[in-house]
Structures are given as structure tokens and as C-alpha cells.
Amino acid sequence: MRGSPAGSGGGGHHGGRSLSLRPRTGDCGPRTVQHLAEQALALATHLDDDGTVPVVFFDTDAHPATEVSLDSYEGRVQELHERYGHMGTTNYAAAMLEVIEHHTATGATAPAFVIFQTDGGPDAKREAERVLCRAARLPLFWQFVGFGDDRFAFLRKLDELTVPRRRIVDNAGFFAAGPRPRSWTDEALYDALLAEFPAWLEAAGALGLLQEAPRTGS
Image (cartoon, rainbow, N blue to C red; front, side):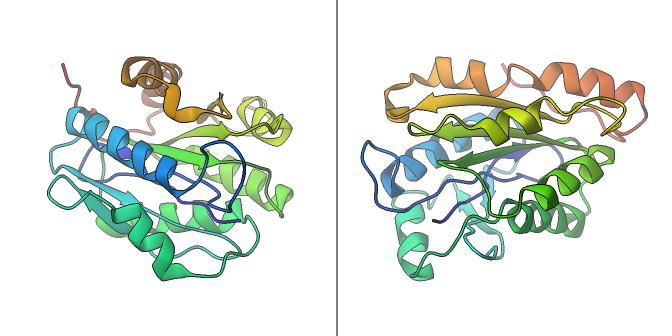
């Protein structure tokens, strides 16, 4: 399995999206990742000002973040998928840590929106929980998207981790896109992606976790 975090956020940072790219039934392969990359890029133009979306592919390990931009997006995901070759397991924690490292390295201070795609559960659930809970103090919101027929029990658990016992703020959302994710219209997808983001902005801002207000688009 392989995943790729890619997303969008303010302050020149775009977070991550994770999608397993193993061959499977339905349309949850590289073409779907490319399709969502393009939709995320369109969303990013409303949330940021540089027209790029950093993407983190992962399997057993996470690959360094690479950018998909407005002037070089066609076929970019398929190209990266083929470059990385053999797929291993599904290590959520490694991907999340790479996103955090990338965000920190950019020096960004504005809130970041992370799209995290996958078609199954991780191989290190406790570590993924720990990373998400520790990351609650960072200006990062994680939007998990499940593709395929899986019930995504673990992602639903991440979405529902208690506040404040497990984490200082609810820093994650989840929705299941089903086995035919490319059938979603842009409008429906954006509504689902952003459903919990405003509430996080308010809660994180009230706790003093955000140093810079996000850019809002029309």
C-alpha cells in the first residue's frame, strides 16, 4: 500500500493527503490521487497565495514532500507513483511526522489544512494516535478521507478522540468517499472537506494555538 498526504493551508504551507495506491477494484488508484490533487490545488488557491500543494507519498516510510503546482500538475501524481516503485505497508505516523516536519521547516505561522487520503487502516495504530494527539498543539488541521469499501473504524476513532483528555483541541475530521470517489462533484467534496475546519479554527484560536489568521477565499 502507498499513501500521499497533500493539502492546503495558509502562510505558504500546504499539508498532506494520504492515499493507498495499490491496485484494487473501483477507482481508488493513482488516477484518483491525481484527480484529488487537482481538486486540492483548486481549493488551495482560495486558502493560500502561492498556488502549490506539497504532497507526501508514503507506504512503510514517508517520502520527502514534493510540490504540485498550477503550472506543472498534469500527470504529476502518476509520475511520482512510478518513481517510488515498490509499495510497502501503510504507515500513517511516518506520513504525519513528515507533514509536521515540512510545515515546521517552512517557518509557516498561518493555520494549515491537511488532506489525508487512504483506503485502509495503518500498521501502527497507537503511534498514529500519539502523533495526532501531540500535533493538536500545532496549527495543523487533519482532514482524513477514506476511499473504497473499508469501514474505516480506525479513522472514525481518530476523529472522535476525546477533548481535552486525549488532545487539547479536536484537530481532525473524517468522511468516507466510498468506492467511487471521482463521482463526487467539486462542490460536494469541498463541503465535506471543510465541514469541521471552521470549528477547529475557532477553538484553536481561542486556545492561542494560531499565530496568524487564515486567508479566506470567495
